[in-house]
Length: 72
Image 1: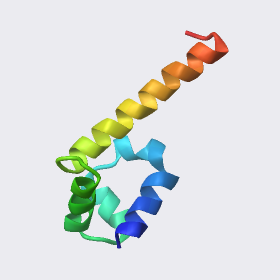
Image 2 (image 1 turned 180 degrees about the horizontal axis):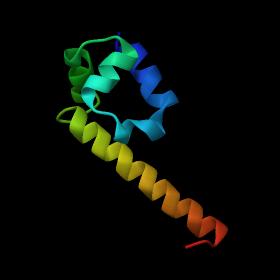
Image 3 (image 1 turned 90 degrees about the horizontal axis):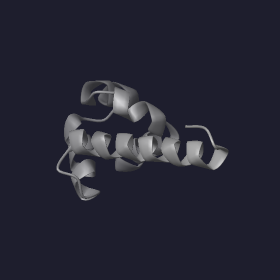
Image 4 (image 1 turned 180 degrees about the vertical axis):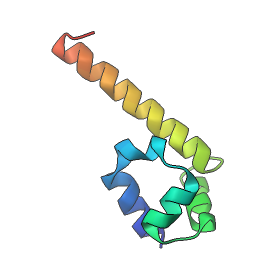
């Protein structure tokens, strides 16, 4: 079950900051417990922190991309 969630996370990473846990449950067909446990196994306190870190990663990638292209 965790593989299914990981696959969804990696294939839809840009959407993760906008999803709440109930929406992710509906999209992956797993329980909230599976998502929370996976988040903790990845080193986060829970899904909320995982989302926060993914969002930070996306924002930093966007900044780097803009610097590389000269657009600020």
